Image (cartoon, rainbow, N blue to C red; front, side):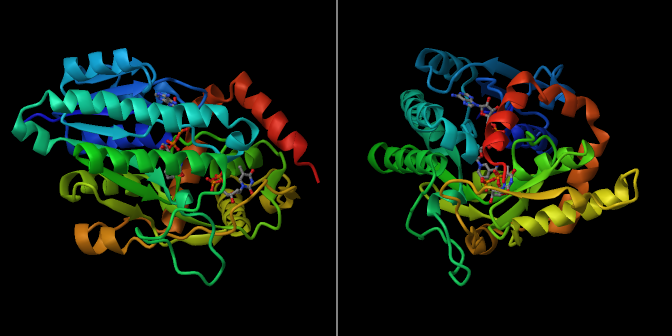
Length: 359
Ligand code: NAD
Ligand code: TYD
């Protein structure tokens, strides 16, 4: 049977990687990508499938109930994967409203539109239908160095406007299952990295600043810890949850790659020293600059992904060193993509965020 899938936020970093990965695994599928095309989106992320008659990009908001109802009735998806979100913690500190609009209200409206559509399906279609909500480990809050990693039963304790808005959306998804029986699954993933990531996030920002000869800004003491997962491994995990996950369950996804930020930055510098050495023979590490810390900066995230491994048989393919090498190489190989995303908005963002953070 041909699969029909609605992906929201599919022109962003993970969504675009997911759509490309999905077509590789399910070439006969019909994929509709509903994306508002905010600053974080780049439709060229999906240039390779623009002419595929089974792929459709629709510009629009997950909170637009008329549009979403039209799309659901027209394309009759059996699966919805919700990536659409405002996703950057620093931006949520400067301007939380968009996070509440999209992540909280947008998810609410999308759930309501989905519920109306789901009720119109036959009993067997209703059983087969899935709404997969893509969330983050940040909803669990911050760990001390000796705390055990987050499991699916760790209490929610979000600390930033971003993580609070994602936590709210997770609660809505849970409630729409519990109250209305909507067949949902939620995934909580650790920090992703890889091709197509907008250079406001740590890894692409450091790669591009290094190549531009700019400062490599490390917040605070650089010892905050994140648990990194290569984006292709996140995509394979989502496919696994769609095919084998239990309705109403949540799944933590992570690669068991806990690293301090300063270690990540140093590893990027080493790779660039090897792959694109500086003209003066010095290391890119010379450009590392400690800057003022992020407000409310969570100290440590770590994901326990045993449920994914034990119950669903999923495992990541990349280690941090293989994934990071691929990522650095991708940014070196794609200067056209890099120049396209460096819009006026991006330059303004750098001035606002890093202007304030000068030591
Ligand atoms: P991103 O910012 O790169 O992409 C988000 C996409 O959503 C963009 O294409 C944007 O245009 C779209 N969008 C925003 N508001 C919308 C709206 N109202 N309607 C429709 N589309 C809208 O984000 P990402 O890094 O790809 O993250 C995708 C999802 O994964 C998010 O839900 C995020 O919370 C979650 N997540 C991200 C990470 C990470 O490390 N990046 C880790 C775990 C979970
Ligand atoms: P980021 O990529 O924004 O992801 P998140 O905040 O969702 O974890 O940041 C990853 C880590 O890197 C986080 O601890 C903040 C830190 N960081 C810096 O030190 N410098 C920077 O310029 C950025 C963007 C992040």
